[in-house]
Image (cartoon, rainbow, N blue to C red; front, side, top):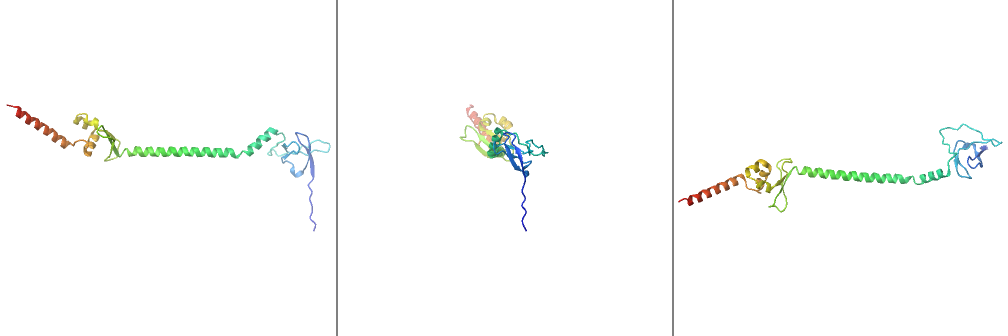
Length: 203
């Protein structure tokens, strides 16, 4: 059997800009084509033999590009050519943003660990110490975390124990200052020595 050959009929249309005549196939109706002379794109409309243009119903959803200037065409070409550049820039910005967030989270976590660590230690300083000393606390808390030996020893012992009870006990237990027993023995020894000295002075 012989194969049938189907020939598509053509129609004549004019470019809306340069008015050059174009011969196209009917399959290209309602499809944007490019003018061979001026290069703009337009939707072809068939023309009659007398040169008048036949108005056909065109689907409004299709974009009509019959009056696009050369500048708009060039700008769209540049946009399509460099369409990947904004994507790369956005990705770079997102990476920088995530890096800043990660650094902030790390710093915040480190600060929280340091603050929590001070709840378990006492930091002891004073003129008699070349560097601050660290002593573990008996329980978690932030009362009298920093203890200054000079402040405690620079005031009467009774007032020091009332104002800095935790610091005084820590210094005594750690051996930085004498205990209550040693203090009582020293006071008693001083009193006895003074009493003995007075007894020798009497005639």
